[in-house]
Length: 131
View 1 (cartoon, rainbow, N blue to C red):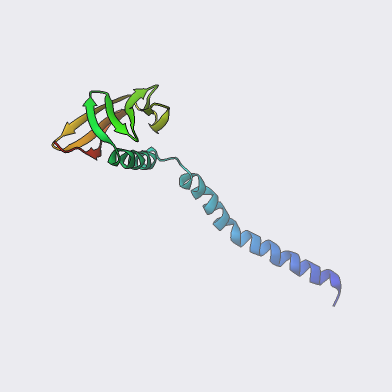
View 2: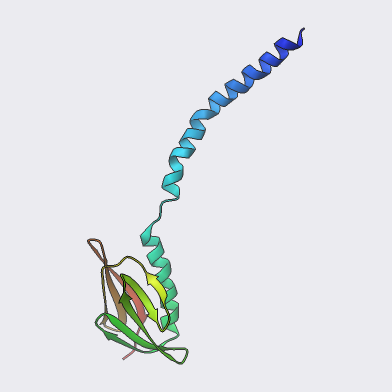
């Protein structure tokens, strides 16, 4: 048997395997952009959970329309809307991005934030406030 026929059969098997794997590779490449898409809802939930942890350790929560004031680690802090972002001041810790409007409300014993992004109005519980 000549070595030319042996090399040709190896090349043909390699091409056959490559052609068989081509649909799998293209399906994976088609799904990839959907898996890496940014979901603002998930980002909002993570940010609101971090904010809830801060507010659990805070005192003297006061809702004043679009501002929430409170005492945290001995400092007077406030949550405000600046440049379409919910920001914790002093400093600039950003919790929500690209929101058009925001206000705080106390209902029963809970503090809620209402924020609008595009055409949807979202409501999220932030803290429990006794009294």
